[in-house]
Image 1: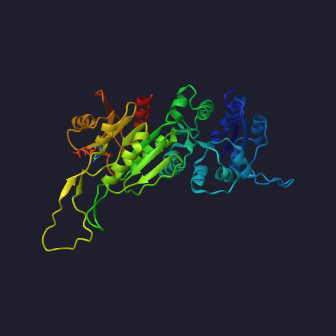
Image 2 (image 1 turned 90 degrees about the vertical axis):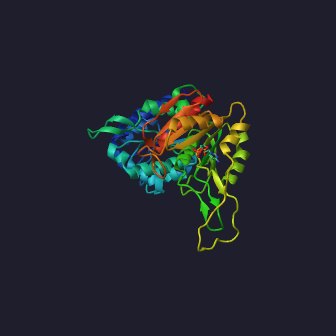
Image 3 (image 1 turned 180 degrees about the horizontal axis):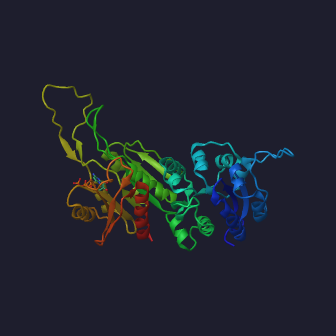
Length: 409
Ligand code: CTP
């Protein structure tokens, strides 16, 4: 019994996959968990509370009040009671409401009151699942630290085939077991919390090199890739120090500590400060290679002639970290190339003393600044090259963290 003593709230929403909840409850109870079921009103159209109450050995909750005796189901008490809240199946509708704090039923109010970790197993038709609104809502939930259990691909209730099938109950239970016992054996444990106990430095975004109090020299980096890596790492249990240049992306996660910087010199100082206590560093920032020799105190006035700025090289941060790295610390960089991509990236990897370098080419369609997709190759110290397909930056982040995780083992 691997869930002995664990208190689990199982939220069930209106999806045909609700029929799988019966098996899910049976498996959870078999592993020793205490399960309290909360159903949305629509969920009751798909499976009866009587079945679920019998299997969970607890009253199924759905309403705020019992109209017969006035008994009040306290969402606050439920939220404090639970060790974990699992919402399976989670419909697109409920996820949208969770993402935006709507609390019109007992399940949603309990979600807002819950102090425990939350796992969400979506189930819906493929087009609903891939709709930008659903994807955005799932990103909001992930950023908040909730774990999304990816649906699998296959035949759907609609008769169509694609991604949207709720993960099988056996697999969900294995994920819960590994969530509570991350050091336990098994591939799910590896996949879910392989970064637990690790502290990772990540840099993201551009740097801004001031010319005068009004202007700066910057670059087109949006920070999206570095932030996606930070989120992926934190989601897998790492404590992340995210040293970020000026960006408009945002992240809120209990395990991500954002350190905001402006110019390359500030990024250097923060990296030197944090790196010694980290197990690894992923340098995704687009650091300026040159900075003005002089920062004018007053705004430069328009003149009749041209303007010439004298620039000096910045310190290569990654190279500095490569010099001071200790045995066991992993160092990864990025290379953005426009020509001779692999050869140039390999040269950087050796010059900077890295374990691997992530190459992205501006030539690739769908890869580059401000896009949500990227296409990378990971080049290893041993000369190995892994080419990946065009993917979302979140999926690319998972590939990079998988690679890092393998090296850290
Ligand atoms: N980098 C760094 N400090 C700098 C410049 C770059 O730490 N002053 C890091 C970047 O964060 C990236 C890697 O070095 O991880 C490679 O950056 P890139 O701009 O591709 O290479 P450079 O070394 O700057 O060489 P070049 O611009 O000539 O291609």
